[in-house]
Amino acid sequence: MSFTTGHVGLNVSDLDRSVGFYRKIFGFDLAGESAEEAHRYAFLAQDGTLVLTLWQQSEDTFAPGLPGLHHLSFQVPDIDAVRRAEAVVRETGATIHHGGIVPHREGGSSGGLFFEDPDGIRLEIYAPSGADDRPAPRSDVPTCGFF
Image (cartoon, rainbow, N blue to C red):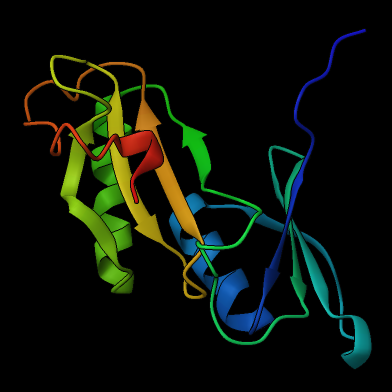
């Protein structure tokens, strides 16, 4: 038996704000939603495939000190796609870590952009190569464990 990741469900505090954020950053299509106040959710898809379900059932912000999601990572084909995404992320005013695109480790070529959504959920957009033109973050702070 083999497994692949299906869609990811995230709890958010403001569905409309989060839908706008994820659609702007990732270009996802709104594939369905519920306006029922007690159970608001939205399905976000790419090329007809469900990628994220956002559930409005949270208050406050993401708690990185509790068990659960560490970060959600999205791979793109090349570092130019990461750079294009970085420009959009900066337009949103999202919190960006490490000052921008960084390699995953010293001497490594893979790397990306580490940032937060409006609820503080940690996100990454990375490419398998091309990030070696920047210095890696401190060696005691690995980027895939960027906190």
